[in-house]
Image: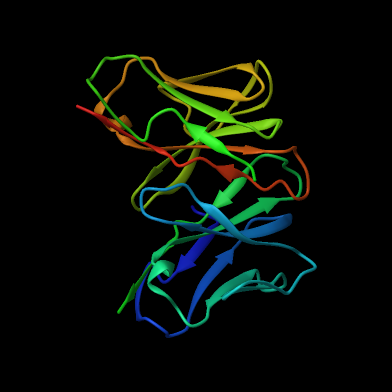
Length: 113
Length: 114
């Protein structure tokens, strides 16, 4: 069973609108959580990384939040652009493992004109 | 900036062929990883290496082997390619094991096995 669940699976929004992607995880003990953006046919690129003590982290129009108590994270995209069309992947790292990452299956976002 | 490069963006091979996928990173990273990515399944770890000549199995190592003779280079080998190995293969590297071990990904190789 995948220990990192993302929702929605896919999303279509109009250019200029905001959206929020969700990530729930059950892995423990938690170390950090990252959000990656993956353009079609490309490798993932890191957007934000948060440790358990961080509640929010921004990168331009991207803002990630983390609630370590409820084991939930969200990625909020403000004023979406066509270039935001991509897959967004939530990744959770365990504190007792230096190597292993737990990947969500991603949310596919399409921004239309 | 960290740069992770992969030898091919697209590759077409026939069933039974031996296939080599090469990955090179230029930031002196200790750790290197090979993943495959399939629709609806996300990224799955095939093998990783935490030092030269060292390797560890990931979640789906069957049908694959790896080689790390130099720190900057990590190769994935399909000994006898099969159609179910058609996939997107992603290489990644990270500086070290530890609390903030972000992995940096290459552009990927889309392999088709006919």
